[in-house]
Structure formats: structure tokens, C-alpha cells
Length: 100
Image (tube, rainbow, N blue to C red):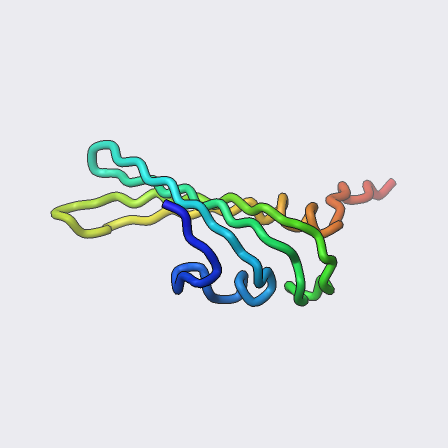
């Protein structure tokens, strides 16, 4: 399933910061678990958490795991590659300085 910026499911903070957003959704089910992988890509055109617009093309991958019971979601785990996003926006990860 593919979504584009016209779809309500892709709106929100990310679509404001990355207005030409494109998203792909992959679903898998095994037993009582459903896994969704959501990949969003677009161009960074507005401030995001203090980072001014860079004009960089970005791709962010997220996933959610849902546990179902009697057809209802009883547990959800989510993760997004925010470090990857920040690196694409020019942020650097540096180790703490060791005090001597």
C-alpha cells in the first residue's frame, strides 16, 4: 500500500515539515501479532525541533508491532529511526568527553 501527501494518514507534524511527503506501508501478520513498516520520504522544508529547514531529501523508517486478542489491539510497540533522520538533517552524534 502506498500513501501520498493527499492521504489523511500522512498528515500531521511530519507532513508540515516535509510537505512533499510520500509514504509506503508494509503489513505482515503472524499468529497474534501484526507488524507494520512505514517508510516516509520527502524534503525538509520547515523547522523541526529547532533544526532550520535544510532542503535535504530525507527517508525515515518506522515500525509498529501490535498484539491482538479477540480482534482487539492489546499491546503496541513502536520505533522510528530518529537518529537516521537527524543525521540526514546534518546533525552529528559525538561521544561525551571523558573527564581526566
